[in-house]
Image (cartoon, rainbow, N blue to C red):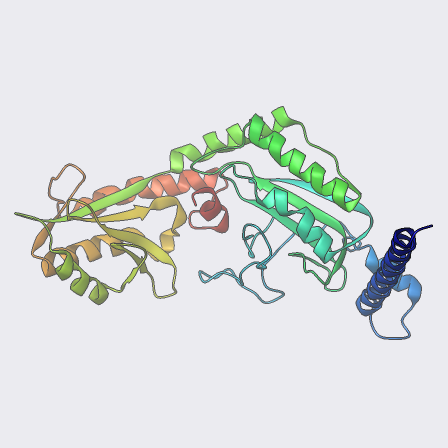
Length: 351
């Protein structure tokens, strides 16, 4: 044998030793994580093993709530941001909604570590179909559905996609892509799930789209000078006095005293101010219509302008009384369709 042969044999032996050492180190690391998740020293090892394969507590499935732990409220500020490693941010405050979501349950043969779960769900979160997808995992220690953490171990997961919103709905192609992404996730994590029927998903999406279409209504007002156009510099000086906060280029947002959005104001290309109330996403008790009319009247005074409708006709002082009954009728129809105006369900549908 030549010196080259001996060198190759030595390199192969060294490589085998390194691979063996790495596998041993990884095994010790996994054992240490399992012990940490099992609780303090002296705990029952059988209980530790049960905790490693989490599932809902006895008494039925607990609906996933990905907000802050107990005590969190539905606030306009929202919850904390999703983990930076997600390809697309998830909604931290997401709650499973049977009307809106298709939810598939994945059951792992063995508890998967958080890093593997985060990597496996990346294709699902990268779906580009105009509808939000979510992944929740069951955390046995806190006994709640949470966003996956890279240091956790999970045996049960939920993969969901919203069926429709005001802009689009789940079709055959989008549904097939969603199921394929979940299937890929299940293969990587050694999990099984029950794939849904694609035509059934499409029909559910079509029914939801038809259900919400009559409520996709905006009410608009325009503030324009009697002659010429508005001066953008003057507009910029005036808007802070009306508690309008910046919401993009030449666009402002009005909130109520509790921080909830009421309506938007935008300086158009024609240098007019367009005020718009997105009816289904604002709760009626916040009186958004009255607030928008009052702001429009104040802007007209400050800018030496007038309030007109979409056709340029002046808004009569009693117009709000004429609109209010129709608005209340719309709210009643939304409630009859099980969509409370301004609720989390309405905000998701009309996002």
